[in-house]
Image (cartoon, rainbow, N blue to C red; front, side):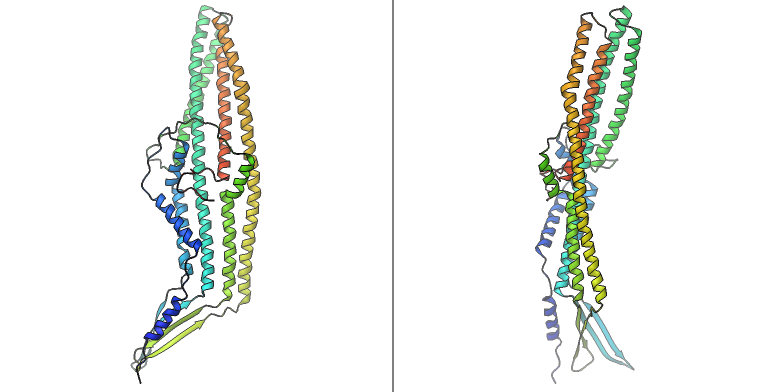
Amino acid sequence: MKPFSFAPPLVGLLVVISGCTIAPSSAEKQAKDESTRVGQVLHSTERPLPTQDAPLADYLRYAVLRHPQVFAAYSDWQASVLAIAPTRALPDPQLTFEADVSDMLMTLMPGLMFDIMTPGKRRAMANEMTAVSEVAYRNYVATVLRTAADVRKAWVELAFVDEALRLRQTALRSLGQSQELAQIDYTTGRGMGSLAETVRITNEIEKLRSDVAVLEDRQRAARMWFKSAMGMKMAEPDPNWPAAPLTATVLPAEDEIWRRASAANASLAQMRAMVDMAVASIEVAQKAKTPDFTVGAMVDLKANPLMVRPTATMTLPIWREKIEANIAAAEARRDASQARVSAEEINLAAELAQMLYMVREADQMIRYIEQTAVPGYERMSASAEAAYQSGMGGASMIPEYKLMVVNMRIERLSALREREIAVTNLLLMTADIAPTDSPISPKS
């Protein structure tokens, strides 16, 4: 009898196994390419700090390219993308060994076993993991947007404090000059100068000095907030503090804001991705009805001629109640995800309406201060100065009116600060806050 060759059965088995491989889907390829591209940008060489006169976009770009929370979100996304391939691959083959021993070694049978999961089931699992990676990508996008929003809010606070401090210091110098004039009037008896007016101005000066000291403390806190938002540790050198003035951001029409929020809101997109993930999990649960197989072969090295023992097993998915329960649970998760999307759409509408109201309210206050309050106090201040110079009045009201002008300008600055905080929230809702020219700018 001719010896039995083990090669043909093994080759045939490997051919069958190789035919069960699944090529990556287009969604998997796109996710892998995109995560690789973003990773190359994030891990590129260190970028220089923006200069003091750099626009806000430079600070935003610097922060999103180096902030640890962005790196963490990216790494989670990359891990989920890399986890797709194992879900569509066959389980690892197993080496087996069997021997019959009596008084001596009777048989010695090494073998190779393969667990075979049907291509449809592995494709469904790969689709589910692809959907999971999309959720991770949307989380990464949301993290980039939140990081940019934090930097912008810190920048608004810092610009507000710097300008408020400058206005207070200007008022302090002006009151110092008025105090000297009041003291001269009181000493010489010119005009209506009195000790009470001198004391009042002195009290105003001390109050302003207290306000300046508070603002200086607030400036230090704002700078630390800005440095933290930039992703810089306390021990690192301070960045170049931005010197750009706080100005009103031009917004598109409200209808356009609503459209952008509905189409590109990061939280909404993340929840929609979770719906897709839940739908993919239903397909995986349904594939549990399909049996899995184990095939292999063992060779008796002691036999002559050589003996091959092929083996095969098949799972029996007979517990229908368990399968149906898993499918029902997956469908319930899908329904929950869809309900969360609807709830988020409702909340988004309410938040947008609130932010738009805050912007309109601030705009009305700013218009009143710019067009009515400040011009009125400036005319009164000019009139008081003219009366003092002509000898028809004292110096007491000059600092009063000047202080009113400064207070109105600080009120305008406060309204502008509130407006820009609301604008930042609007830009976050519409995914328009990240620098548009950045290579990692989130896609809708």
